[in-house]
Image 1 (cartoon, rainbow, N blue to C red):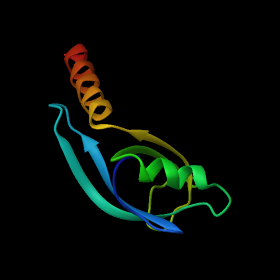
Image 2 (image 1 turned 90 degrees about the vertical axis):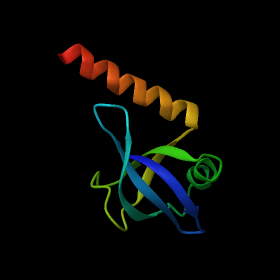
Image 3 (image 1 turned 45 degrees about the horizontal axis):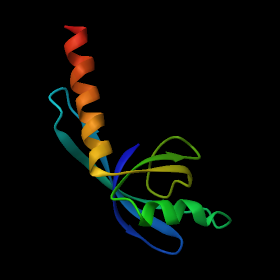
Length: 94
């Protein structure tokens, strides 16, 4: 899931799930509280240091209470590259 990191707590993180439409607009979909693994501080450190992230959950459902297994921090520049990538893919389909 592409997400905006809202807050990072000791055991959980609150994020806004994002989507990028065909025109490159970022659409907020929903706020979700996800569980941080108790044995891996690297995920919480990554999320604390990044305004955006690509987040992967244990069950792959990206629902309230899902456990994060991997997070890749993203800067605003990274998000803008994703937007450009989406626009390029749409133009190639036409």
